[in-house]
Length: 219
Image (cartoon, rainbow, N blue to C red; front, side, top):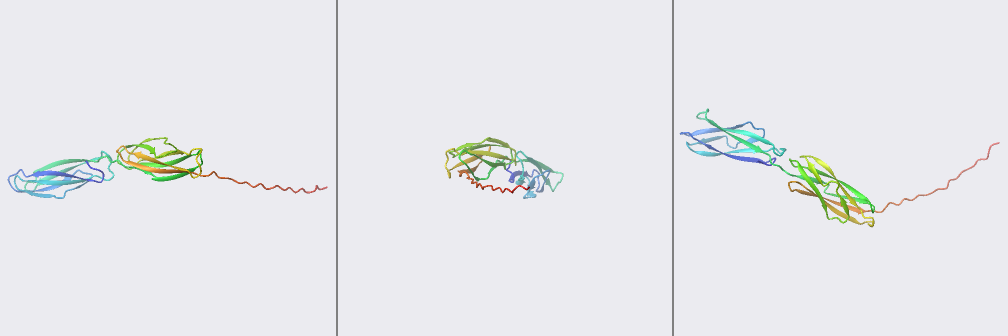
């Protein structure tokens, strides 16, 4: 087992069961993922053994549970009909990674308004993840219409956050809330939201007199 992008190392034991010194060539086949044999030829005395290292690289984009097999073969040079195989199976581990953007945001509103924020939650892991949302640190009323999301690997979803400004809030007052997204795997990311009360706009109107000019009637 290995994380995406990691190298999984296997150690095999090659033993010369013959009664004479022999050189063995090592090869591999059947794989899709990258495989490396640091040593491809081993010379052994009769009855001697040696470790054989095999490195398998898990692709960086491998999803949870993806697997690949490789057959490693040792062949006698003294008698090419004598060979032995070892079948290696490598699996990709589940990796949990999430992102919540933007990391900070700010909004404004009048006293009594509901200020809405839209965040983007992304599953950057390689497996389906259930992400829960919570909030903390606020004084004003905060509402999360949805607090749990099931996201496939690579998927994103919009997260709505609603902050209600108190009716008696004065101009310039503000409140902060921390939104926390928690992955099924334990990873946490946050977004800091700041809401500020602004003054209601004042509109001025100027009324101009209407002047009518009457022309004398024509005979």
